[in-house]
Image (cartoon, rainbow, N blue to C red; front, side, top):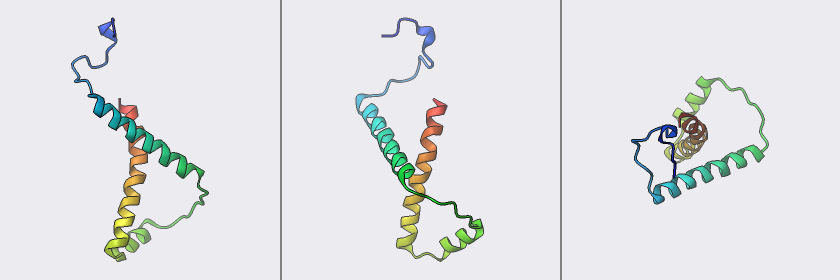
Length: 88
């Protein structure tokens, strides 16, 4: 237990439950797994005008658009987790 209360960042903050801590750990584990996967894949830089991407998205049928949305969601999660970690 912390004996020096002055070192606690937010002494009034509610502590996480064990279940919440495990959920957080799972989110971090998934993030690290995705990050390793993306880093291990070979990639090339491909410059495409943003308007071309937007127009292509506008032409997609719903099943393909759902795949794109899931992919974008995963990519955004890779960006958001480090930002959330920095904020804490």
